[in-house]
Length: 237
Ligand code: ADP
Ligand code: UDP
Image (tube, rainbow, N blue to C red; front, side, top):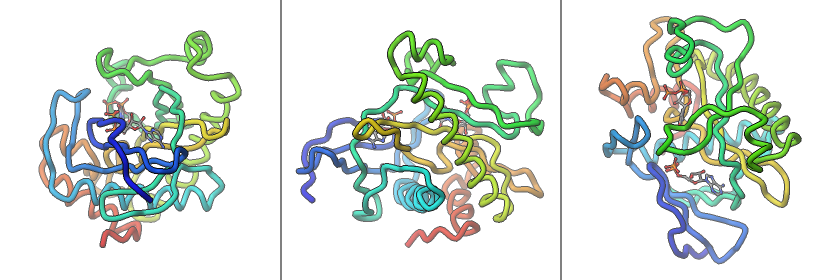
């Protein structure tokens, strides 16, 4: 597959066109960003770790019946994916309170939720990704009711699979963000699932093994990601 021009350079990944109009090459860079891009650093091995982590998780999800963008791993930092027409919202599922839900609702961190919550946020850094609901998505034409229903159902199905997988590895899956897109009119999981976009706490110590280590300057960020990979059996070499 021939790599062509860079179509988009995001905060952490770049996407390149290929000679196949339906496929992209996604490059995972070492750039690490937080607070809508206000804090950016290069962390050695991050691109490679997240590329391999994402591939491992998406393969697991596919095996559980979730349609994903994954095609083939090209090298340490690059993967071939289906070119999706992205729905411009982030889907966030929470099992335990942390992050923005604590700030918005004034609740303490670390509360077990009776059932998982599901939230939509508009992808817009300049507006700090405001929360939106179904009616906004339909009214602005970002998606249909059917697509909304499917994003929710798939996000919660993913929760069943991943909560158990991380629990078996000694982690609490606190929350995570997903992005979906359309491929030939069908909803498919895109972007990435890695410790950059989820919160994982050790079940015993409740220590963070995710991007909160970077947000809060706790150190050993990638060592944390590598420990998660090791415990879930995701090969990094
Ligand atoms: P950001 O845009 O938030 O800075 P990234 O650095 O992760 O994020 O850039 C990746 C971009 O590629 C995101 O805008 C994401 O929506 C988009 N994207 C992810 N997966 C696909 C895909 N399979 N097809 C097309 N675009 C995708
Ligand atoms: N998240 C993400 N990208 C975003 C916003 C959130 O990957 O643009 C992830 C984040 O890492 C966490 C979950 O989604 O695992 C919920 O994030 P929250 O709404 O609590 O926002 P935060 O306080 O992390 O900014």
